Structures are given as structure tokens and as C-alpha cells.
Length: 231
Image (tube, rainbow, N blue to C red; front, side):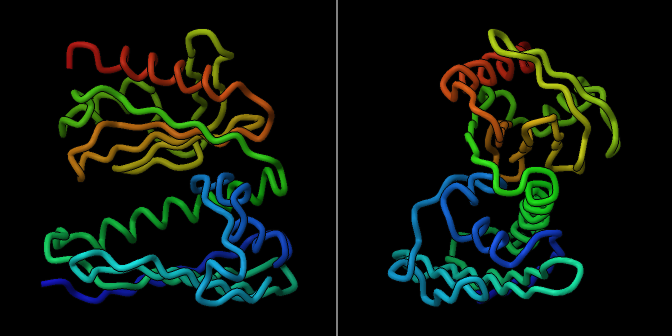
């Protein structure tokens, strides 16, 4: 039997309410910190009140489960406060730790939103993602992967040499048991463990300058494959 849940988050962003609205309510803005989405507009939202309030409710599943997302945007002297609420009803087959995992994930994505709007506000985004081999889903594979990256704390320098495209050099901005992320001069790169879902390690890159998305996707895929050889 499913159960109702509600997650509440709040972040302060160093930009105007209009810039925050663009980041959460437009496809290019969403690509800058989350992933590319479809155009929402007044017809695609439960509430559309720019730049103050956006509510999106996804169609319910066959088991009655549903998800709703509310963004409340409030300007103040030192920037803008974004209050975010994810609520809904879980399905009968959803894990007991779903709410904890989801809360942890939103902490990560909202951190990425802060990074995006602090360092790259208003920039157009090319979004790239790739997945590692099946062996990377093993519980111990993530820890070995992070150890091989040679980073352990926010502020550490990191350099990733990709085949056929420029190396990605930057500084770690987030690291925990599920994510490692770093910021380069023109992008955010994020490694996702996903072991709690028995899924392969993945990488996402939010590039704020023109890149060949297909070439970078292939490069990240090839690089991830080499990281888990023999796992």
C-alpha cells in the first residue's frame, strides 16, 4: 500500500526572481542544473504565476501513485529565496527508504542549482549524460571509482582525461556517498552512484559553452568503461 509524503527544501540564490524562474520553468534553465525538460507554459502547470509560483503535477500511475512539485520564488535584498516542495503518493512497490533517497537527491540537485546560478547564470546549456557498464552497479564499485578519482573533499582539484575531447579540469564542489561533482571553467560535471537502485554509475555534464554533444557522450561512455574494467 502506498503512502503520502512531502519534502520541503529551501535555498538562497544570488540572482533575481526572474532568473530563478527561468532556471526552474524553462527547458534551457532546467538543463543548467537538472536535466532538459519540455516547455511548461500556463497549459502545462497546475499553477503558473511567473516569477512567483509554479506547481507541476505529473499524471498518476496505474497504482495511483503521483508526484507534485511546487516552486515558490521570493525576492529579497541579498538575492532570491526558492522554497521547493515535492509531495505525492508512493506506489505499493516503492522502497521504504524512498523518501530518504529522494530528499538526498533533491539536496544534490538544489546544490547544483546554486552552483549554476552563482557561476553561470543565464548561460545556454548543452546537456550530456552517459552510463557506465553493468559491473559499475555493484555495491563496492562506487567506492573504488571515487578512490581512483583521487578526491576526498570539496575544494580538491580534479582532472579527467577523456578520449578525443579536451580534458575536464576543475574543483570538487560536492562529494558524498552518492555523488561527486566538480566545476570547470565552463561546466558542471556530476558522477552519480545509483547503487541504491542497483543501476550503473552515470555521469552528467552541464556545459555552458558550445560542445559536440555526441562526441562528449561517446567520450564519457568510453572513459567510464575503462574505469570499471575487471570489476
